[in-house]
Length: 191
Length: 191
DNA sequence: CAGTCTGGCTAATACTCATTAGCCTGACCG
DNA sequence: CGGTCAGGCTAATGAGTATTAGCCAGACTG
Image 1 (cartoon, rainbow over the protein chains, first blue to last red):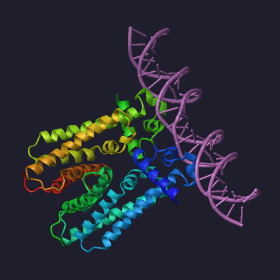
Image 2: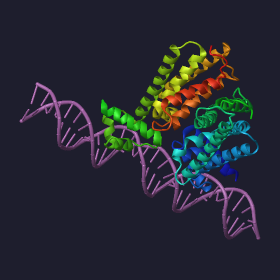
Image 3: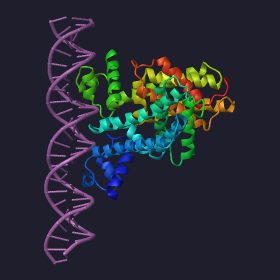
Image 4: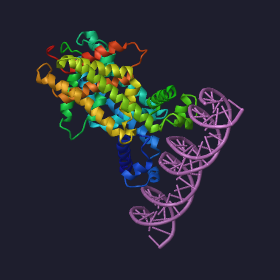
């Protein structure tokens, strides 16, 4: 259904710009050329719009992460690829990522628990890569947890400031940020 | 006035936990042992509570940054000190920093413009340090803008996950993160 | 002890919203 | 052509909420 997709896209844009609480059904309707109540012919509720956006975002991100990890061997290559996937997702889907990070508070159970679980899983994936690198001696870090937090936070930042029409291409950002990740991990060898 | 301070502190905690829009005056009143309307004997409005929190936060942060820069010479030392100040502020005042970053959308003009101007000034300060380091040859970076964004984003992240009673002390986080900043900048000499 | 000020309370005001009800039109199907 | 139904609309509904009005007790003050 094209109409539902239009509505989801409009909701995403408005949630990003105004926040979930401050966005009204009338706003969303206005963005797709109808009145607020008419939206209910296409979507279940405002909360459902948010839940779908946040859940599919985390699932996509986790899928991208798993594909990146599965396609590589060794902590250095894995950290690079996982960071590439992370940053690329945050650049390419910056609205989804932005809302996904900021609006957990507005998400109601059981969706909230599900999204938090996915997020915890995602964080654990990065931490494991860093810990493996430390164990194998190819990373030199004070705290593996701090490094994985730092790498994840960098991606979140990209979702905030990245613009498709900015001076830096998506690839340029992706490559520099995966270098950042290796620098943060204190890479000592290409093992 | 002790009462006003209590109210501001309660509002800060609630804005952090629930968000500005989702926090009611009755919630804030409840947190300090009075009814919602009674708050108006002490504060002008809900919006005023937010404006004070956000403005003083950015002013404090900028003051800490200027003190750090003024007390040091050379890009390497300056980046280290500025990052220390940045991370220490975000650890020590994580609620203020958290709200300050997330609730600009809820801030109404002219406060919003003022806070955004302060924030732009703060960002510019970091970028200048990195650019100076590149010009002097002691940093090796792809894009000075990206590095300064990255360093700032790391601080924001600290405000999200740092806990006073966590396993890492404030100093431990501050020191590791200032190392992170130098690693991101690709420090080549202690010039 | 009368007066005033502080800081609380409840009730009223004046919205704003998500959601539901019920109607209407035009497209498509037989 | 008669019927159905998708997808719009306006008008309720019902709740929530910032803020204001107006009242009141108790603590100082002279």
